[in-house]
Image 1 (cartoon, rainbow, N blue to C red):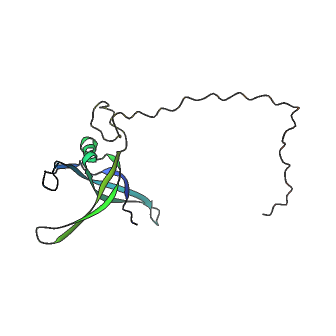
Image 2: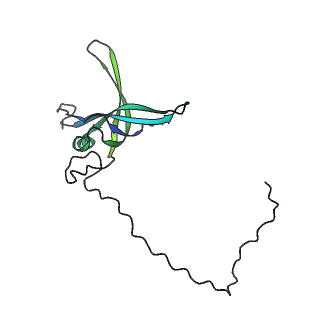
Image 3: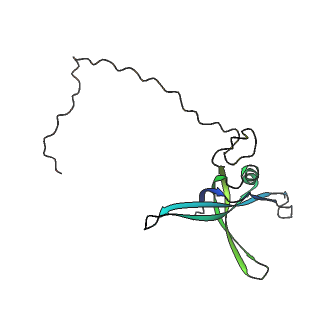
Length: 170
């Protein structure tokens, strides 16, 4: 059994690079869309001297088809996203004959986080926000609590236990 799963929340480092793959015998439908962009995740911690430190890790994100559509329409530099996917390492030979490697996160699920800009609430250009039709959170109306009932002095139901003596084991 094996598992290859990645979950990241971070900020996009630059606008997505969107490409279309051309039709070929192995891909007769062709024109598959792919979007790639860098994603920064940061962790903050205090070192031994109590100074606040920040460590930023950069990830190469690759989104295909529908996820590439979302990336192209809504993701811009600075957008906060939640990416769920799997790691993939590719190898190629560069122009000088050296073997090169890159590790990417291939997107299975992509969610935009944050708020959409207030200056263009009806526009499709988002800095974040999952979907245009998303409604803001509306808290439920407060419910009335029932008024306390008077205590019946004739009631002889369960009584509280008497306080224990001071013989506790600790």
